[in-house]
Length: 455
Image 1 (cartoon, helix red, strand yellow):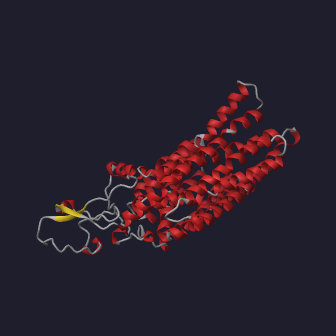
Image 2: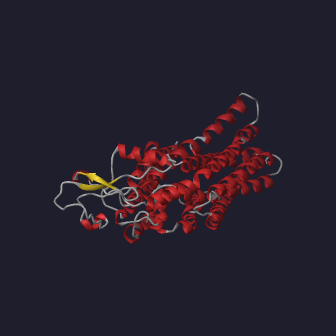
Image 3: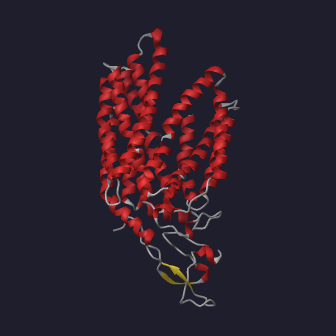
């Protein structure tokens, strides 16, 4: 229930923070989110009731949502498309590395001085990093690394675009019209489905099959969990760096290399997952080998799929796109797969007479099919990817087209950027309107470019 509280708050709030991240100063939102995370983690260590700990875990999801949806867009604005995957990989390896450190540091701390102190050390280090982020980081203009930046892309301390539900749904509609984003999101959902099921039930399967002697059950479970955690850490780091290297080497605006890399990774992962499950009752060592290969194949998709999201959306919609992808992949991915696998395993055990180990083994076989389904989704995304990248590049480079409008409707739109009419003239991109009289009641407003994803 504690994990569910975190996941629910994280995935539901991600689109909201993404929407705000497209309109406000991003480092302020991120720093605020980390601050909430620190306070929630620290307060959780003082919880005396389960309900208090549940609330704190939900607030941790709030902090996570505000940070994870926005950070990739900052990296996108700092580095050119050709080098973006490489730098994204350094950000993405924080997940497996942090998870491994959490097991080691948290477990050691809990063993010697109690579990509460594990929730007190991490907020201190996070608070230090939050202060560095807030005071030392210079936020780049949106779209800086894409060649479509103007003064209009500089961050503002207030909502300087359309706000409210209508703007949210207009941006969402624009994003979901991009077919490569849609199918890469479906593929990413399959990835999280597989990873969520294997992380939850993989160690349990191996312990049910191999830890049969009552005298050594605890020791056997400990070693299996330890080896599984080490493999997840190593494969997470190696797979992410491998995917980033391949993306940097082969991805070009005119091809679909990133989508094909994801497709190949999942196509390789499917058989490896099935083989790891099949050989588990007979050879634990061989099962570890196939688990290692399957996790490398799955995690090599991390950098390419993030790069796809960033270059098929315009700069002022990237955070919202990231938030919606986060909602989709967790709702139908790792939030659903452990429950589904557990239900199937119980059904096979109680209704069909399988023992617990064999029932769980059969319940995990569909994860291999989901990996192959994700591979198909990325192949479909590859069909649309060059066109969508070209469409985004055209929108960023498109000259402004003007029509007459009243002063109250003055909105300067450059690559979907909005400008407050009351801003100083220098903040208006230094536009010169030679045909407009200064005292005239008619001003100029650009017509909006066509939405991405339309032919």
